[in-house]
Image (cartoon, rainbow, N blue to C red; front, side, top):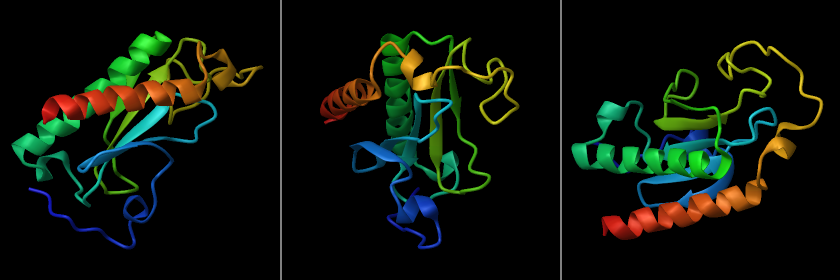
Length: 152
């Protein structure tokens, strides 16, 4: 079970970790600044825990419901080729989930975002999205507000 402990040396305890999109008591959603992958979100657990198994059953359920909601918004709004969901934490051992919309036109597809690029994009990736990132963030926020309301 997690406890409300932060670690001053942890960048996800000290900083938002990206552009804040939505904040809940147990987690927050940010949009990462990744120009090659503009629809790259991180769901960050508020307490400093390293592993998903550090959470109790209700916390795990809340976490995955939020991750699923982020994935659903990306699928509905962008109709990507694939969604990548990962929880690595090798560099920053603070529980967080990467939720990334992938497209067959992106610079790395079908390689992982951390792999080698297979093509160069002429126009910025953000311009290829079917809606502006601010609108996508707004949709994320609305969906997550509804999720929290239903949980109460």
